Image 1 (cartoon, rainbow, N blue to C red):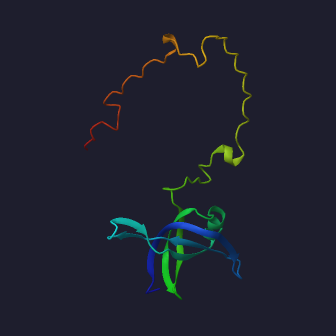
Image 2 (image 1 turned 135 degrees about the horizontal axis):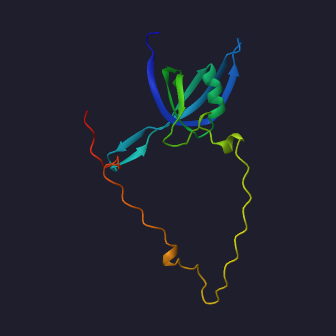
Length: 170
């Protein structure tokens, strides 16, 4: 459709995500993000927050179910899609929505830790710590003896340290 304006919105979810189904059973989700532009105040010589701009985002199909399950209030998101201004309100018909990894850690089904999926192995029973030797003259922890110190770690060879090695030319 001509006249559409593509936009990327990077902001926080404000409120809850509402999931509904159309008459044909297609899932549709709607949520609001609030974009706060930064403005430079020349009189004070510093940056300040501008007037908050709410953007109502709508997604449909399988993405709507994922959005409803993953997003909550105050989660930082990045949404792309076509933006429209109707009745002084910005609407974003989202094509893609994702959690902003600059602010959150996100797991997908394949990378979800076993502890969170309920497949974690049973914790091994902890052995009781041996009692500490009596020391009447020392209140703090004992210092390690020279034999208990770990061996020094050898420096990496220049050819094995890929970070500091010269780039290869082909």
